[in-house]
Length: 111
Image (tube, rainbow, N blue to C red; front, top):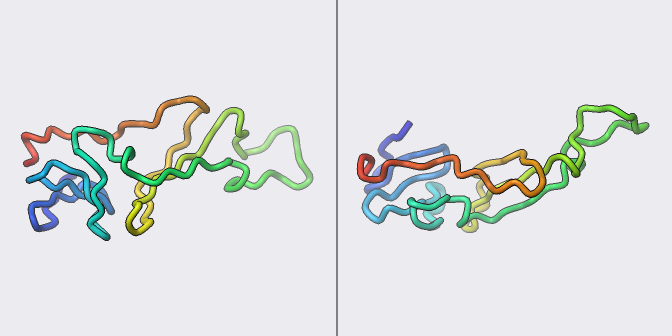
């Protein structure tokens, strides 16, 4: 859902705005510019590629099967604002899989 967040900006997610006049992604917490809206906003983010074992702690004692993802099969990628460190998104991806381009707007209709 796109809502008006003032100053020519449109709220796209909880922490991400689209500046309709310049057609750029902007953090709505600190105003940091994340790049052109025609591209993936994640390209302008700080990226933390996590080891899933840091988040999903393996069972103790270790078992053959568990609910924690193995790093050979899963990676956890976190996206943060370079200006204020608010987290925009988290993705669970297979190793080698490209980052998801999950928001693609019709910029002519929005602006």
